[in-house]
Length: 100
Image (tube, rainbow, N blue to C red; front, top):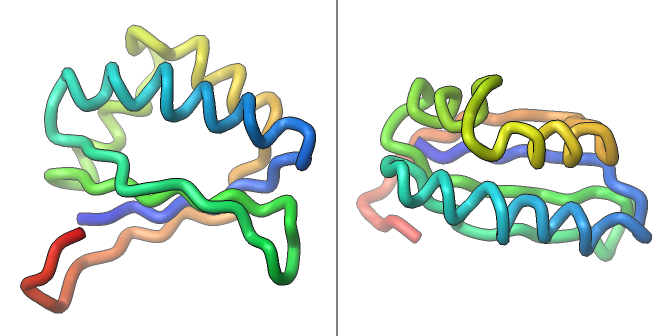
């Protein structure tokens, strides 16, 4: 499955949000297995305070486990949550054999 999260992040906080995600959570989650960050994007047309995070997971349960309270990098996720607002979470299932 793919999980697409949309966050509202102040432009000044975008780089720190990226660091907390890409340099703290992602290495830990990928070492634990079952998770891979596909990418992160910021919107340039429309609301520029939107950050999109696309993650590939073996299952939604695996994705949830890598975001559960008490995980090794839980404080970093709490810090990220304090500086952002998750606006949307979409669970995407592929309809093609292609996988990014």
